[in-house]
Length: 244
Image (cartoon, rainbow, N blue to C red):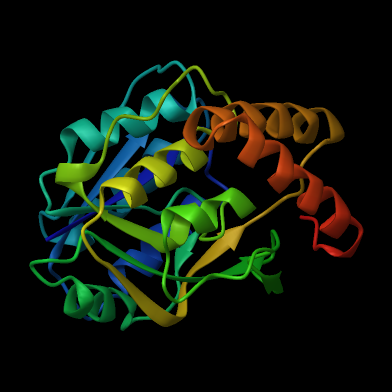
């Protein structure tokens, strides 16, 4: 079973399309967890309205948290499935057969199933593919190039999923993916879109903070020399990369 986890906070603009993408799945071998941070808008009303359509597969809770990654840790702790998949408010499962393809790929010796992400804007229109090239043979070393697989496009066996390190305020998902790939016995690649990933752009201030955090994570995970060399290559490629 797959535990699909959605983190929300004041997400009434986005949440219904996320929930509808889960409801659209032909495969029903999932539980759906919504972790809301005590929204003050109509988010909880949307959850209550759609809850009966999940036939008991939906569990949710709304309470204050200490930020995105604290909420993700709550979802991880509550998950009862064999695998966890974060599809946050505004993101969508790509097609109605996507979950069926993931379940089919999740063999007994497979710890990670991953695919490609389609970047969409606020209107749900495709902007681009994920800005990194997703390798078909994902290995730890590939993550020296950054988050080469979108966090919304990776499904991880719960038994190897560590809690998110909340010392990082923006890029704890990068650290989490590195640790998952490091612990994985086998990774299965789906050569298809598995999610629509909503982006509203990143402010210059947050981009600077993200770079700083990624550097610290890479130094911890790969060592200083490898990190410096990787950043040298990233800087060379940056003018030609896609920003979102």
